[in-house]
Structures are given as structure tokens and as C-alpha cells.
Image 1 (cartoon, rainbow, N blue to C red):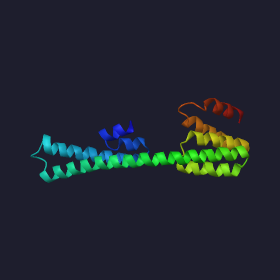
Image 2 (image 1 turned 90 degrees about the horizontal axis):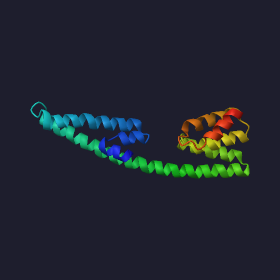
Image 3 (image 1 turned 90 degrees about the vertical axis):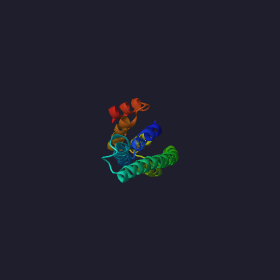
Length: 165
């Protein structure tokens, strides 16, 4: 969906993929330059200087191309980041299972630095805080889970933990 939006209106796909200012800037350049170019070619060719029409058209095309290239780069980056987070979550889960809470905490901190909107990361953080008897941290983590869990996979567990803590 983000790809299609980015092709039709450059920059919107980047906005969806968490590059808000870059996407907004490219969308604005595309929109303004596109309007100037269309005015110069179709609406009022006598009123808009020839050089301005071609400059605006070139900038419009350049912004479209740049938005597509940056979108591709962002998709690759997010895929790579997702793979790294999965590995860190596995590492944290394994550390929790053997009782190495410090290693689990470090793995979760590295994961949060990569993506602070990962639901599974906050579920593990909440479970880790429960094992460490950190009630305040556990409540904060479960509240974050409730906010981020769009698919409602952890809703019951979060509600029970928040009611108990």
C-alpha cells in the first residue's frame, strides 16, 4: 500500500514508513513544482517563463525519482532492522529462561534502540520487570503494550497484569 501511495504522490509512502519530514518535503516539492510545470505547459504558457516551466518540470521529476529511491532504501532498512529485533528478542527470551536477567535487559535495551514500537519487545520487558519485581516498570511496559497491540494478542495478559500490579 505504501508503495502505491508513493508512486501516485511521492513522499506519502515515506511518511507511512516513518520518515515523516523527508516524505512531507518531497511531497511538497513534487506538488508545487508539478503545479508550476502544468501551469507553464497547459494552463498559462504565455504567463509562465519557458525556463521556469522546464525547471519546475525537472524538479518535479527529480523529486518523484528521489522519493522512489528513498522508499526502496527505507523498505530494505526496515527489513534489516526487523531481522535484528527478532534476533534480540530471541536472545532476551533465552536469557530470561535461564535466569540471566541482566543479559535479557541489555538485549531488550538494544532492541528498543532499534525500534521502540515493537509490541513483543514491551511484552518481554514487562515480564522481565515482573521477574525483577519492578512494579513501576512492569506497569509502564504493560501500558505501552496496550497502546501498541493493534492485533490485541496480548490484551488479556496486559489487563490482568495491570489489575494485579
